[in-house]
Length: 636
Image (cartoon, rainbow, N blue to C red):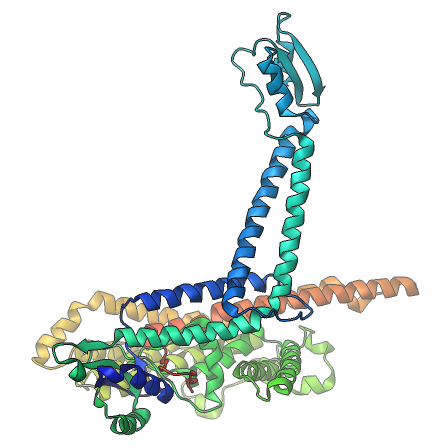
């Protein structure tokens, strides 16, 4: 759930501004409003922060595997040393590149001293070096005095005496001889190696730099708050006041009020105005909170006035994950990896991260789904051991004809006239569309609840009408894609629900007839949204399609391995078995990676776009609550 916020203004005497801010930071409950501010001290802090972060990035690429002795210099000097060494390494590498390029250019000419050619020119002996193609060399006239120094398939290397070749630019002489360049190149390579060894030895500083970075971040935050405080300067110095604004969670307001009374601050708290953008703080129980690492990974934060969909997101994401992976053996592998990682982390830290708990739950859901489908490394049902066959539900067994719906559902749902070719796949598709209507109808229930508490509760009828229409569209999807008979009430639900939406969508006050007219003025966009809702229900078929694709890939690799039909001599059997196992290892590993990508593309999309975006109307326009504090508090 999203925790309510109060907008607060805190007024203090300017002479106590620094001590008041320190106390407020120790309190750690106020999220300060951001302002564009600048000061010399703040610029200096940012410059120092940038240096430390740059030094961290440099040393991470040279991290030593073995710890070295910590240098005795202070962190400021060491940071400068790292940056200077990195710049020196960069200059040396550029010199190596330049030398290597020049050596490559002149090495075919052999070793000579450019000074000698200059000396001859001063004495009146002009020599012009040329790199000519064989065709160009053959065209030289007899009057051209030329000495050939060497040649290869592409060029002839020669010097022309007395006069240059007309229309040809002579070869540009190097500044140093080939030997001198090679020596310089070796020296610079040694210099690069020595600097890299030095940087590797300094990588032991990374923990200290991390501490320094954390401290400088605190100083930056404090100075930002200090500089951003408004000051009333029209009074005498001893009466000058400063104030700052921010947001505090409603449950923490009492803490701030007590602190204000103790410190002599003037405190004003009010509900945020419509044009305010308070930060978002979500609080959930320990079970629901395990979905937070996924939101952090996606970088999604609901707006303050939007929904916290963590509970429903977790439930449906578990279903989507299981159906996309679809294989109990894959789920068992993920669970084993998660269990090992979790035990290792807990042994070191004493705590089990929420991400580990999330993947543990996802793997268990995958195991359950795969087991009831009889999916274990895509092995055919006939070849499964008897205990695993017992776990398969009849509805997901392709060898059993389509089962009738339970008695309480038969008045609404009718089986298709013709038996589908694959009853198990038909049932999975039916399940996909049913999950779609449940999730999307739930979104409109949340909208109805929200609108009922708004100044225009009549609009809730419009949301109810859209909900009813969604149910009618669901039956239309079953009729069109699964060949199920269309109930007589389905079209009434669609038309009636859409009609209710048009009548009540704009009933926010005033003349009822005019409001209906305003609603019908948006007929085309509304109609297109209805079509989009129909497509949203159909889009859940991706759960079946992606799961089927993964199963088909697994079956293909199983067939490629030929593990069930290996024969020959003992050596041949061993060789073929090893090759088959390698094929299976590669194939199923690749399939698991592709399934993981599919979860991100399809599983996340259904929750964020179809559910939250199209039907809940969420824009994820929020930003996280980050109190002005010495140590951040986790949003729970």
